[in-house]
Image (cartoon, rainbow, N blue to C red; front, side, top):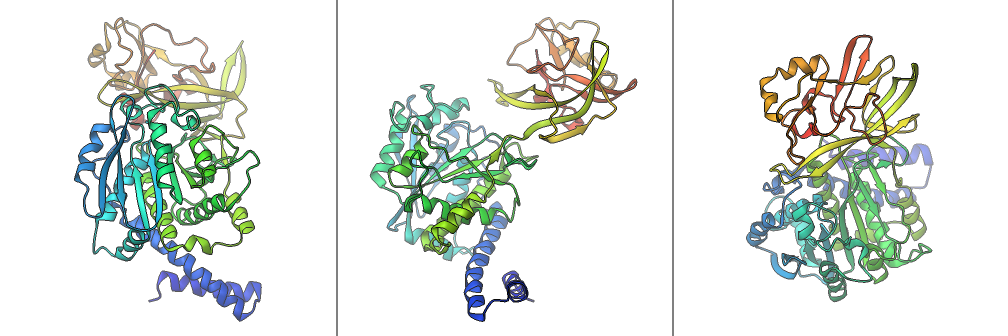
Length: 506
């Protein structure tokens, strides 16, 4: 039985000879390049399929804290060494994990924004991979550890991670502090770059999950950027290397998320670390983890980070990224990756009818879900808003409802006021919900104690008589005649969405 690579090569020979009618010498050259490309893709496939073996089981959600990673760091061994390289404003330790003995230094850091934790999880998966043996990847592991020295900083902003917020405890965005260096964490990052002088740096982030791939309705699961080092966005050898490695990683990821890789606009940001590190002589690769439908804790994207980073480390270790085409061709391949777009809502309701001044009006409704941090055990709840109204025909929804022929009306409010949310237990909520009663007045409520059911609690406010105002919490009904088709509570309507995280206090 032919291997996957053999079959692909056979297909390519047929394609070249029948469509391009090129010489045998040219075919040999193209096949040589194709072999290298296909081998790299096959390796990426193997890493993807084996990820579960190396997955750090401690991480089951994104909202872990500094104290959660300390035991994991202390347990690392084998080719890995751990050292404290600094501390945060609030005196939390910042650690570096070092691996390898090669002459090529590579620096990787995650969670410079405290609420962007996907790559941190992937780093610990990579640590497990680097410590493994006799698993079919020994040649890859040996190449990386022999030809490079890797320096990982898995949680650069532990104070932000503690609050699960973007900024540091100084309330400064560290990624806009590369010039003033007013954050101790930012000063540490610059010192590491200036001291280690890595050939390549990986700046690992999470991005808004509502970014689209260009103007399509496809979610940008992963986005890349070869940051500019000047206003004119010139491409020197340092930046070209970024593009070569990104083209390599994009090719690997297209196997798993076809059409769902994007890139950022490369407008120069003079305050940002990525732009400045590229300017300081280190090839900078920005990887942004977006969203993947049905994966709110980003376990799928964590796996894709694992594959992309190891794919790039392999290319750095063996120099295979240099076999990409000429500078002009590399730039063209890089720019062929579509830019991030803003064409997505979490929910898009199309063609709903609302009554205004006795007149039916057809509108589309764009709804987004926002995570609100709390002190509760779960750490957050969702508060949804109506983001846009009107003709949204050029936009898409991660979930969409065709409301043609349906009328959007206010949800029904339970007739009696409840003393507190605890009184909900005395009611037949499934029956009330079927009748469109999803809102309840309560006399006592705590803003950081969201309800344990998918209901809308009215503490200080009222449901608007006219639903559908911008920035309003989307709690309403969609009806066909007198029959309720959809009950929306806080922007959610599916049965499996009607849990505590999706209830809301207003």
